[in-house]
Every structure is written in structure tokens, then in C-alpha cells.
Length: 212
Image (cartoon, rainbow, N blue to C red; front, side, top):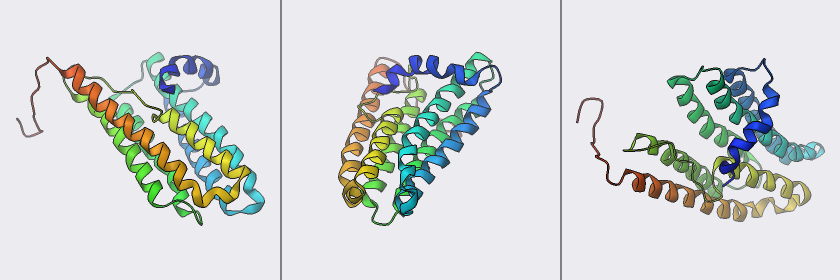
């Protein structure tokens, strides 16, 4: 849902890049904020004196989203986009979410099964989003039912804030993740439906690298 406001968000964060930042630099900084988010979650939940780091998680996720918006914007602006760059961008998006949120698996009394389901749902949603580009009349699907990448960043920022003010709620975080997972699964379903809808009436051919 929040992806619909990406254009406005890009205008807001464009000033951060100035005239010095390149698309690759934005991507690298995005990776840095991925690591900082994971550290914020793990250390904030595992080291009581550093519990305040949980409040840094929303900031790190916001900056990660900013860098993610900037890398594509700068690539288009400077005409430096490449096939390899797009592949890495898609890969780092889903791997970034896995690192950011998967770290909770290693937190004492943290969620386990619900977290695995959440991460699998993320991979599925992004897979079906990219798959849309290879179908007839296709494009990269970004439709979402509160389960897109920016939406997930907001949800997980909310979880970090909840865990900061109510640390005793960690054993029950599986309920929160289960609800968010439903939205991510619905996002996959709407992307599948949209891909099929736009392909209707266009010729489809199945093929592999060795031929049809």
C-alpha cells in the first residue's frame, strides 16, 4: 500500500543524495542499514543495558527504505542502470528483509515458526512480483495488501517499539508476526491475480534455455 507513495517519498529523500551519491553508493548504504537494523533488534533484545537500540530500528528501516528508493532513482537519473544492477537490487531487497527480521530467530524467547512463515511469505511475495515481469504484457508487480516491502518496514518498526515499551510481550510476538504474514500472503495472491489479468488475451509461450 505504501508503495503507491514511492514517487513522493523519492522526492523527499532525493536531497540526501546531493550531487555526490551514485546508485551503487545508495545500494551499499542500504546494506549498512540492513545490518544496523539486525543489530538493533538482536542487541536491543539480548543486552538489557542496550535495550534502547530497539528505538533505533524504525530509524534504520526508514533510512534503508530511503536508500532503496534512491538507488533506482539515481540509476535512472544518471542513466547507469544495468541488467546486473536490477538483479542485485531484487536480490538485496529480499535478502535484506531476511537479515533484518530473520535475526529474531536467534533472540532468546523470540518467535520461531511464525518468523519462518513470515520470511517464506516475503520470499513468495517478491518472487511473484518479479515473475510478473516475465509474463505476457508483464511488468514488475508492486500491488500490495499491507504486505509490500515498505509496509513490512512499518510493521516491524511497530514491533520494535512494542518490544521496547513492553519487553515482556516478546514470547507473544508470534501473534503479531502471524497477522503480518496474512497481509504478505494476500499480497502474493493479488500479484498473481494481476499478472494473470494483464496477460489475458496475449500470446503465451513456454520455453527454457534449451528451447521450447
